[in-house]
Image 1 (cartoon, rainbow, N blue to C red):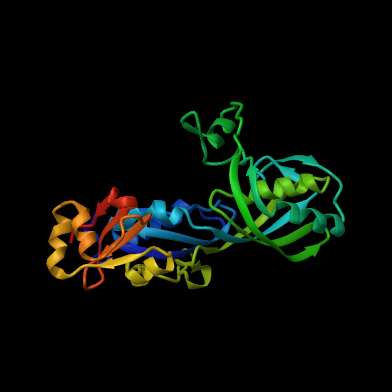
Image 2: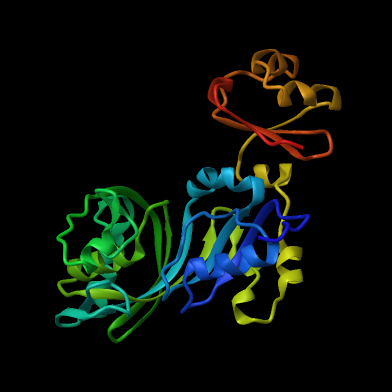
Length: 299
């Protein structure tokens, strides 16, 4: 692979178009930045569109932090039909009468709050070391285990005949396809997710994302849209920040004990996560609870 671009370390807000896989979009970014180190913080199904938050270069180690962020989607559920994949690309496996608007509006509030959700069998979740979707396609039986999720809110945007469009604010790990399936059952019918758009991930909005999938943006545009990992980003993520004087930077880089340096700056040793920055705002280290976790970023 050619030498990476000089600004290949950072994060990028990318708008994925429907019809492309998330990995198609990642490939374009890798090519533009000339780096193999691009990490996603939650993929989107091929039929879906919306915001992907990508981390590049040495900051791919921050992916687990971004994975914890909640998400906001706009989805259209179609009642009366269910597909095996719970999306428009699947095969119809059942049909049922279409519920009335009143019934739909009555059942939706039941899905707000903490709950156990059974993920779709056609998913990237690993079962015995293999993706569930791959097992299904090879003819194997798959039993999906329930996972705890939280739906913070459901807002009804439109109800027309057999379709309802809703805006969902949810926790990580939530499958909107599974939500559509369960809402259909609760309404005494069946359903699948006809369309899906991710409009926000944590503090990040899809309106701020670039869209190279359209072919309108070239490599220079992607490189120009790459954002630095800065104290402002950590403030957005509600992660505390510590700035070190230039004289103390080598102390961290040398891997010496954190206790004395935290004491020097008056930092209590009870934080969950903290970003340590140089005086010129470059991320130096990520340290965790009690100073026991540390990931140092060489300069």
